[in-house]
Length: 151
Image 1 (cartoon, rainbow, N blue to C red):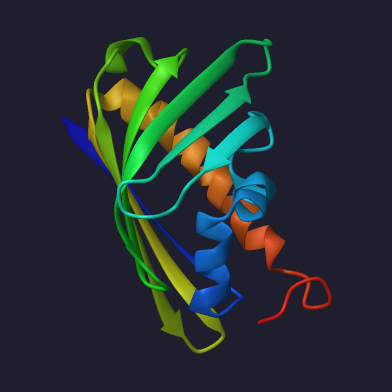
Image 2 (cartoon, rainbow, N blue to C red):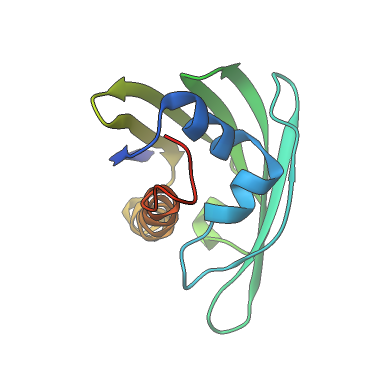
């Protein structure tokens, strides 16, 4: 098993970033890179609550993932499981992996550390790295315009 870790700086305070990570509207605004658009999402961001998101690849195939929130500590930490309902990486099958998100303040906004662990092999890590890199780029862009978003 293996993992990936991505760190991004976001021009918004932790409470605003945390809201984008844990609400229906927030998730809809950034989850899924530009080439894997989000189709639907359901979010219940509380310990024991769950999420389900469906996205589509450029070739039209749909993929759906779901999981349970294990930790929700506003505005600093989220831990959740990740599992494919259908689609996704074949090597992941019915396996459950883990996502940890830390949000820390810094001058100018928040530093987000995103770790996805428990992936099956390097090919799966590469695929998930592509997806999460694109998603987090959208999250960063979401807060680039100071007129649209409070800091």
